Image 1 (cartoon, rainbow, N blue to C red):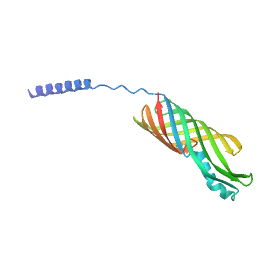
Image 2: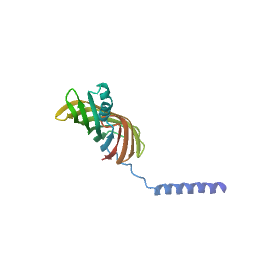
Image 3: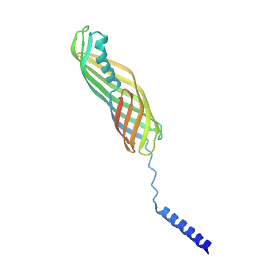
Amino acid sequence: MMRTAQLFLIIGLTVCTFCKAQDIPVLPQEKFRHHEFSVSYGFLPITDANSMAEECFAPVLSFGVYTREKTNYYGALNISYIYRFNRKISLGVTGGITGNKGRASSLTKLWMKTPKTTEVSVCSSHLPVALVYPPQFSLYTSAGLGAYFLRNSFGEEVFHKTKFAYQFSFLGIEYGSRFAFFTEFGVGYTGTIVAGGRYRF
């Protein structure tokens, strides 16, 4: 009699559990989005770092022949498109613009407190690789290579250069899904500290 009661109790609990499981809705898996568009601002791109070094060390190394002062630094504005092959590997292209403006003087070229403007446009491809990618949060690293187009002006004189550009982000932190916010730490032409937002579609 006891065994029969235990058997019916087990059957009853099993049926209740099955019914309860049927009541719980199964959430559909979120669609994986391959395309990504981002806008960011970069603090202290390498061009600003070079200008800071020029302002500090050029007067000393040239014994006062060349000086630069009162420079305003604007950081870097970057726009990127990324194609995501999967949750770990992506490939994209970045365009950006940065610049700074100050005053320069040279005894050899008769510059007397002449305004000096540095403008840089950057175009590079980059490869982000996710290190940790749970839902809503990820850690990643990325590397980018490309070219930058430099325009330097000293008063009436204007110089143009095209050179190799790079950006290495040692650590990126992202939070969000379709809309995400991110911060990157690295070195290169888009900034030492880069912060912005992403939209995936």
